[in-house]
Length: 382
Image 1: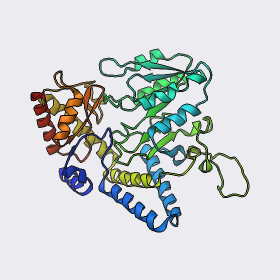
Image 2 (image 1 turned 90 degrees about the vertical axis):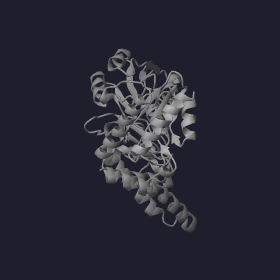
Image 3 (image 1 turned 180 degrees about the vertical axis):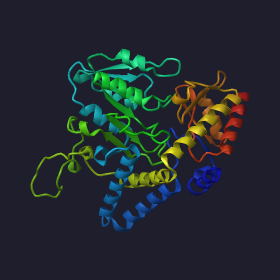
Image 4 (image 1 turned 120 degrees about the vertical axis):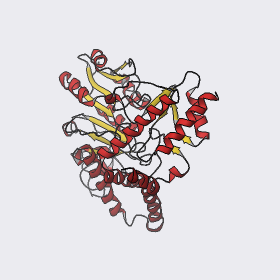
């Protein structure tokens, strides 16, 4: 299999010529095929304007089908959005709240999965933040924070700073028993980890494509389980939200009977088509092989970091681990380390006081050895 990864690295990832790029939990570099799609779309727009718009629309629907397939969802449950933030906001603002309701959220969530819920305070909705303990989020603590007012548990599949992987199957069980809806920020899990919404019936899921899915920024997805579509208030309604043509002679307000009602206006055509190209690459490899490779690379990062005398933080249980590795050293500030590594051609980042490393399928052993040597050098020259 090593030859396959090497060939993939050479043919699809020009970024590897210069950088040991290990920051896919931030913004991923585009595969060559995705960049080619963006360039071709620009040329098409320059030369033909709107002439071939029907062909673009057909590609958008093919991307919807692809996303639905990856999630084991129905295409009617998929809306194409601009960001995870937008997707979460559509759920938060559209949920059928009652005065006095509450939302439970882990305290270490990315702000995009906290602020949309806090913004509901004027509607009588309170937010309960649950701190992590010993490097992980404990289901027992989430349960303790819930009561008869709790309507939603909003949580990431993988926490952005620590890399802790939440057990979605367990969370579904907790929520079903208590009549609580489960809203998942999947941007750090979708790609490294398979998500099957039929096997794990979460209620809502939002993700952008610019991290582990290797797409451009501004092209993402929202999943709304079918039995919620008519129970949520449609937000951001526009011409694309309704049944019938925008060019009809009479106004008839009938929302589409599927998740497309949240696609109010025009699509990010270029970005979504490039995301489609990135998804095609991952599909060709296969979701299981992609997941296995990313988790293997992350495990190697944990091992080499320990060899370099850095401390790997968070839970060490295999079922808690993800494609994100957070490390620290008492004598080296994380931001300083990230800057020093960048000077050596190694791309990582600092998040909440830790050095965060997030490899992908094309990162080879040479990339990892460069990282090891740079971590040693960084520690010695502090």
